[in-house]
Image 1: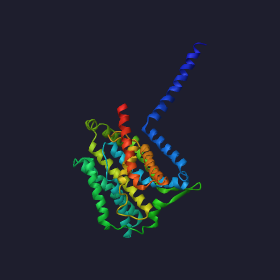
Image 2: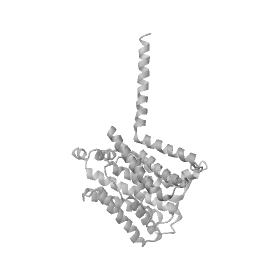
Image 3: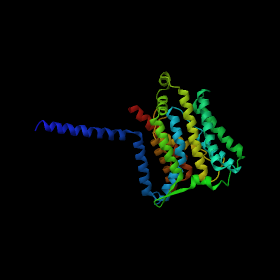
Image 4: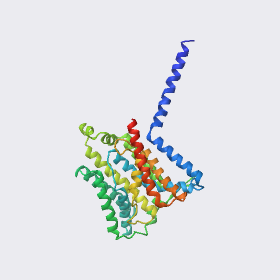
Length: 336
């Protein structure tokens, strides 16, 4: 009898221990805390307003942050390498404008869309060249690109928007896929696809491991034989490509390409990555966290509108959220 009891007790312990470890791992992940914040915001807004939980409002939120999230996936990879890309807002506007201008000249929609994506890729590649070959700090290089890309938007259009875009192009941002009586926004589908692809790339490929390695300790990574400049060039190029995709979807949604489009969106993109747990010191970050971070920023924007707060306060609140997110990240690092 006595020999059976310890065995049963030991068996119970060995079964409970992995469960406890699993829950501890989930709770201590940065994404878990960010997700709780998102749930709390949704709960508050559902009590404070009568329209937040309506299907129309929820799908509007999902549609509106989709292109921000897609660009933020690329920004996440850049920040993981301990870099930064300030040009994403201007590149988003330039990519959408490039597609729109080609369609206005009679170019087919698929070719024009590819041209917009290529525009983002080229700008990202140039950012990578300036940082790796020109030895410029990422902040300075991408700040210059921000101004140049925005200047191109104004210079190419003379300050006038490009209108009368084809319906086939606008469907990319405006079409809803009917599912169970609900309309699922097409940009949301694109966002989920790129979230899965980017997450797989970061966590299941050799290049993904190298991205984390460069951000964790660039010197040690270089001494191990990895070409760190090649890794950086790749992440800035991918960031430009993903930003180009976001810009094309945004332009398709608006139905017009304005030279002021996506102005200030670099704040939203960087905030989505940082609030989602991507560390500005490099080496840490997940696509799931970025997705939640982008949702938080859009729910915050939507919540301010629903509660009647003036839109002029939006940037102040966004800046406060970024500062608090960075402070919490630094506090977590000190505890570790």
